[in-house]
Length: 72
Image 1: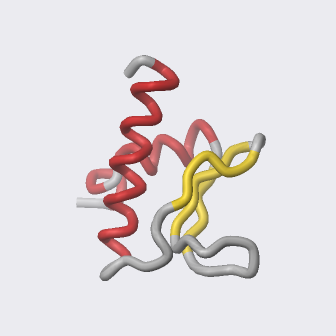
Image 2: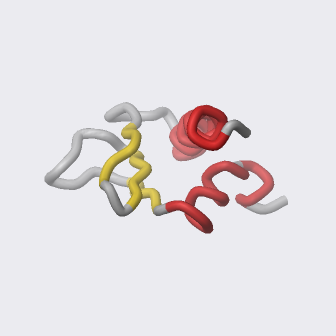
């Protein structure tokens, strides 16, 4: 299995709609963020127990975003 299989909504987001950022920086306290040309659409918690937990949170959130924004 690949990351595409585990995180299909993250894959689609990056492929078709914008990008994600993982890690801490000077501009945000979150560990993972989803962005597009208009800016930040979502940011996660400041810490996760694992990278998998962060990506699962992002994937779940993006699934809801696709449903709300695109009716999928």
